Image 1: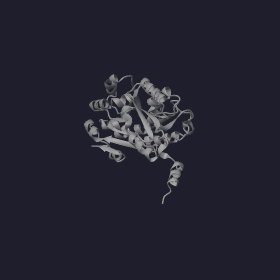
Image 2 (image 1 turned 180 degrees about the vertical axis):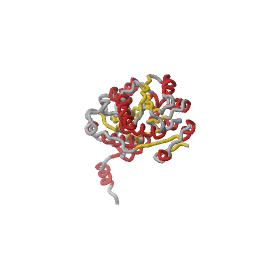
Image 3 (image 1 turned 180 degrees about the horizontal axis):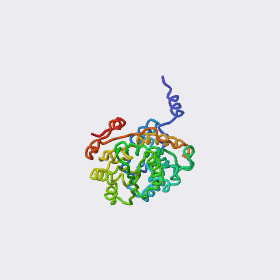
Image 4 (image 1 turned 90 degrees about the vertical axis):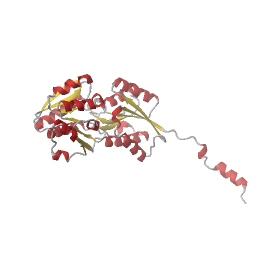
Length: 317
């Protein structure tokens, strides 16, 4: 026969998990230009592998910016006020907005164009301060974009470079391109604009020469229009985001979105567990993607060399 007193004593002395307060979920912020969510699912998958479940032990506060750096700073400040444990920011403009708007919050950079030149970090190995994350290996990527574009249009002696004058990384971008252009025996035509209303004139200025469009939120927002103008003016272009090829652009080459976001998840995990951003070495990409739009090539009357097609991860037909 069971002694009721023993049962009662056992219940009172046992751990009362049912009465303990639930563990408060961690809260992180994501500051991003709206079309740049490509790779975000990879980020969530990587977090799950590390034991973080959105809606469970993790809350993700996403904030979207159309273009304005000021709006980015405001949203970053609002995330800091919640507060969040860290902010993930994608691209140079959003990283700068996060740093300026939330100076007291750890920032995980995703695909920083020039982390050193922009003053985000003091070194790749020991970034110092409150920022770490992934950088774009910009010089290598831009040099490779130039090389691929010259392979697609081997007769070209001049290549246009489209830049948004307001982008703080333009000097770094153009210097990197200039060095590779000299090696390839190419001339560069610098085409800078301030607003999207100048795109028609800017692409017409290329006069049929190949065009390298340097990554910028304004250009990404206008990707369909840029693709249409490029076809209309028969200007073969290469871009730094897959979205351009989906919109009708000729070629895309850049470091893998999936790699950047999965790597960012690792940084977030470490910071949530107590690591300081300044002690975490910035990572440079090891995976790259090339996509070619054959429909666009046909519309422009361009024949893409077979050797170049064979190097592509994706071919749109």
